[in-house]
Length: 157
Image (tube, rainbow, N blue to C red; front, side, top):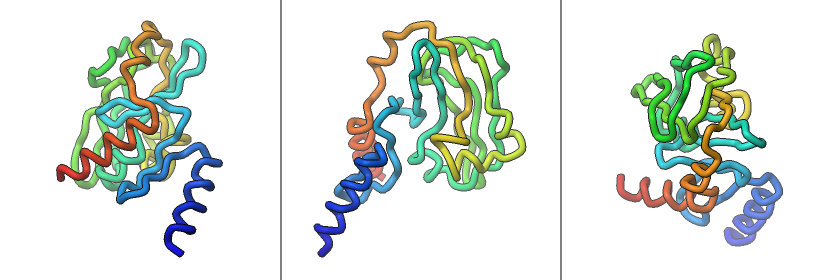
């Protein structure tokens, strides 16, 4: 019974473009995104990228109460902090998974920071960037590698 349910949920997840682990890892990981080891995601469309924090990150943070956003026009560099997320548990830097110039920030997060919790991959995106070095994408993880990375990281704690 359990294996049939797991198989059905895996087929359903595949249809939704998400990865579901066969073990204890339960975060949503979208297949069409790239991931940084600091738990940010990036969606690439041409020379533009949308950036946010992953479902896994928001689960560990807890209820987000404030998101520090960068200024439009600011340059961001891969791996460097451009803002912060404050939750009831902690404050965490947001690192850019890709280098470029900030084109847009999600102003909705100023009034509704909890969008990062309720919709980390859609309404809870943080910045949109014009990419300056497309080759940096190769340094990021795909969904399978990111899922495995999170499983291993969680096993250590």
